[in-house]
Image 1 (cartoon, rainbow, N blue to C red):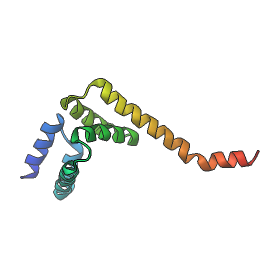
Image 2: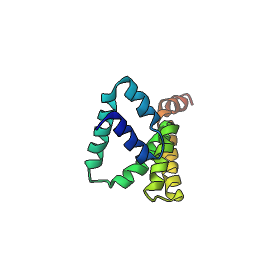
Image 3: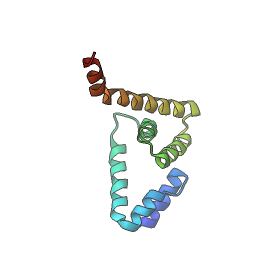
Image 4: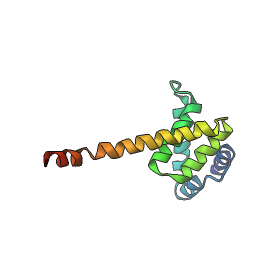
Length: 117
């Protein structure tokens, strides 16, 4: 498979131009092929159905603040048959976990505040 064919497959799969992969391919085509290989490896794991890995991807992309990835994964989730409510709930999970990390990261500060009492 050529890089052009691979990028076209990504276009069809995501419903949009895979801009990050297009740019990466201009720098190093092998990095794009490695990315696809990694995705195939991940999807070969069966403990979590691939469909649900997609919802997890939305949540992780949201927690990391990656707008392009969020849009891409949401489009894919819609094509996989997820409802707006299910997609929104994945975003709510990300929001909750991200908020929890703020609290966890603040433990030293809270301990310091409480030790001053």
